[in-house]
Length: 295
Image (cartoon, rainbow, N blue to C red; front, side, top):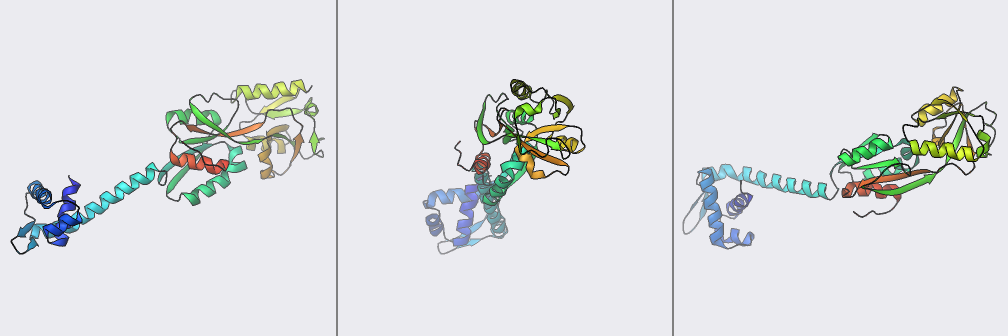
């Protein structure tokens, strides 16, 4: 199907004059006549009758006109949809995130993004940082908000968005519950709830090494893959947990938060993008970091 032929047909059908239609299309009359003749051959139907004084639509031309107009409108809509998707103004954006990012900055960034780009359908997936990196490399998601600093991010563009610290979550009746701030050494002998080493071995080892350097040797009594589970276990009195500072927003009943002096690795959150990141992914990353990201 040659859309140019239909464009020429509609112009002649509306002008009922080959010369005016040619001017409207910014072309000379002979090529216009050739386009109409080619369309008539394609459809095996005569579309116009013409004499020295007038041009008229045949019954076949009258039947074709509304369909041809709709065809051209549909083609225009399709081209516009493709352009909007290419520019990041429309289409689907799939983003992964770890919960500390959503607690900290991502919820506000998503709100701004949806207001800025209402034509983009945003699909958010809560995933571990490791799973996000695999999904990015496989093209399953377009961007990810990860725990950074302890993962292999080779081949991806990484931009740090947020840095904060760990706090100690203790049961409300714990001896440390009344403290505003404690040294890392205060964790000596503490019954600790920590994420499984298999989740992030380098981070797990760095945290344990930091406590050892401070003279603290806590006893890991329970593993918890998420901070929500960890806080629930703390509320149940099963131990204390080191959680990102953003966990304070949950105000978990039965849990008190205590600042810990410097020594632990920072909670560093970053946006991870493919090298050829989609414009919509760059826009969401920009809203998260408060800056414009280039491709």
